[in-house]
Image (cartoon, rainbow, N blue to C red):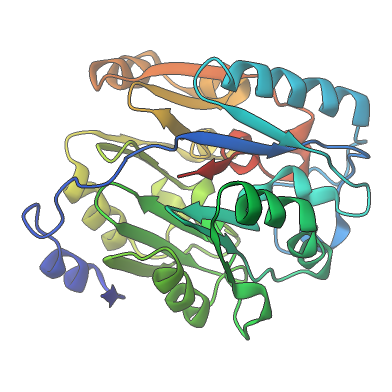
Length: 304
């Protein structure tokens, strides 16, 4: 079922209809190293978080990324694929490659610089030949669907939250709903200037959310999502959103990961709330990588 208004979403949802049935967090993660790290001018046309006025230090980006991989391995198995200077945004693989049990889903990217990533054979081969996954390739479809950048998923319940923007159209939302095998997808407009849902919304192990209200075009959408997870709702202000505090991910039932900059933006009571909800806060310095307009969650591809 796909719904497009808060009223439809609240009418469709109930705990009985959407019980916690599947795994809430991934069993492994994969990253793509920032080899030849640079800022993609194409992506900057609709990503206001990119720091195009700053120089990109490729060595520092590589060091940050290596530290991220090392830290993630303390939480779950983590694989790193090589990067390619011709695909500078590949450090954010979750927009192009995502998984559901038994499937690799390949996104339909808006910008040509990102479409090149979707053709790489090694990631396809890893999932197809090693993990025996079916490949669901949206990149050949007449849609725009930037996977878990545009679609934030409550995995245990099978519910998707899909923000429509230049990076995801309604046809793309329908294609992702089918590809991920979701039971319910709530589609809504992001606020003008927002490009990906995962910058303004994080779903934490199917029991809490981090949400930036000013990232949504309609405040009623925020309240509808919050109602499902109340009282475990951490609301961000504009400065915290800009610091990528919404670009967080739970990689185990008891931990939430975000960049050091994002973690530093949280107020003590917000950190205390995460702890009360059973999450330890884990962070890694990604200051150089964040110049490219994404943060820790964008760097992490999940393997279910």
